Length: 271
Image 1: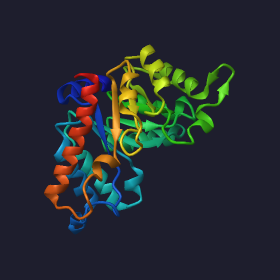
Image 2: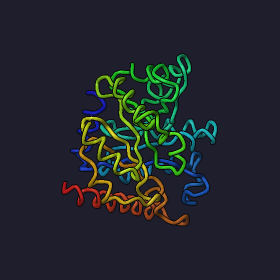
Image 3: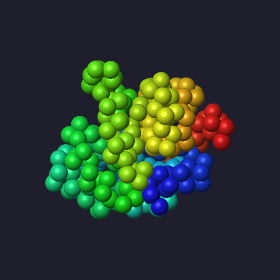
Image 4: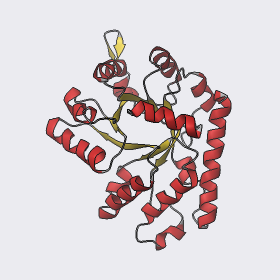
């Protein structure tokens, strides 16, 4: 089963296009978790247990783990292990380096941690992406048009009659093999999402910018012409409970936040 088939299966089964961004800040997680040897791993486990039947998958951002040293490495390993195999596991690493280095990144995130897909910067070209594309049933999400305020600095540069992000996407489609190339496009770029998804409904999209970034969910979904997409929400879900909540309150708050966002998406999509 290739990546897009796995994605479609879980979207259908759980009636969900959501992925939860697992971006744990040790200073923000509920205080009851601090008694554990690895608070971040326990934090993630509770989130997963509370929502695994309601989402398409999870997206740990490795920056939040690498800064914790060995404890962070253990947390990534433990997190990936408790995510059910039918759900998609997206590694938000934004890697993009040449040849041999790219191969070792691919070994780390695909072969060792067993992520299904990874976010990548394609700036260094095809050889920086190739080792990831060689892995069977894995996929990459190339950064195309991101949701941050500085995205226009380079992504909206005009080269003759095209924007740089359009050239990146054209190249990415050339590299596509077995439906293993998708793109990151922010929820604030609805016109661009409309145009691209209408032309390429078969291509997977990872869409950040809903939740704490407060982009318009209704406007976003009305401009999508594909069901091969996932919307990421992080802070609005994982920090939905107060810092002094109990374990039960935390789990209930996470589940409620996921249900509410999922219901909003499905109501607009009329799933």
